[in-house]
Image 1 (cartoon, rainbow, N blue to C red):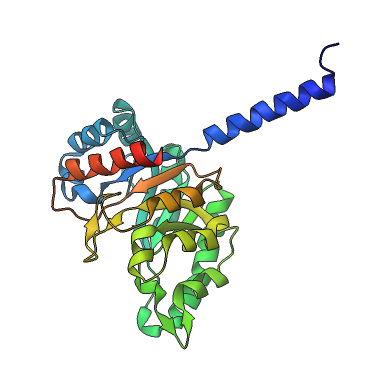
Image 2: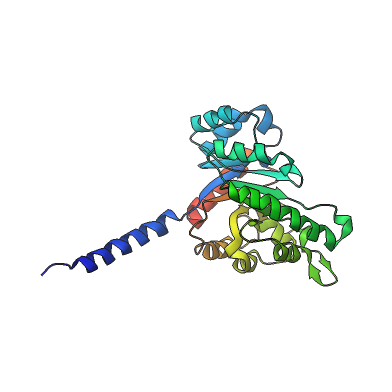
Length: 269
């Protein structure tokens, strides 16, 4: 008799949905911090090592010349996942947004809050700033993301500072760049933290932790990356994850390659 038009449409939809799931696998970028001063002194050499290790892109601070930077990245088959600056880096917000758009990127990461000597008030004041900056980014198609460290898990009269910051910021305008190492360092489970905040997660920073809390290559420490993978499966719009190892006792090339190999072979990204 053949398929009815309605049945055929359902089959097409199912095929499209399955394609969407496959396409949801995130790209993997490398944060240039591990290469130290070489990121400024020998950027072509650094990019070659990153490309050779199998990364799809980089995360770094903004470059003064977007056109030249894009051309350089293109020559190695790399893309800009996003930019990362400290608190106050958004003083040049218009320039940063223009740079991201020129680079076909949309992730803008910020670390830190205002004057932490003010205690919980620093987070409350910063939330107002972040909502405004995030709104401006949203209007331009940019995701403004807060990158956590471990000190934001400090409690003030029983209130976790990071929880207060999240509570007072608008999820529409302030997204999360969750650094799993610093969550673990702060005494929490990265798996449970990601579950709790998954709706707001725009990107994830991956690095591992040795038992002595030193920075480790992904897969060589105590952090539960298979568990993290299971949580992130539900995040179909996760475009990028970023390997960000602050320092290493190996060469940066070796460490970056180890982390990329683990993610590819054991985690499937």
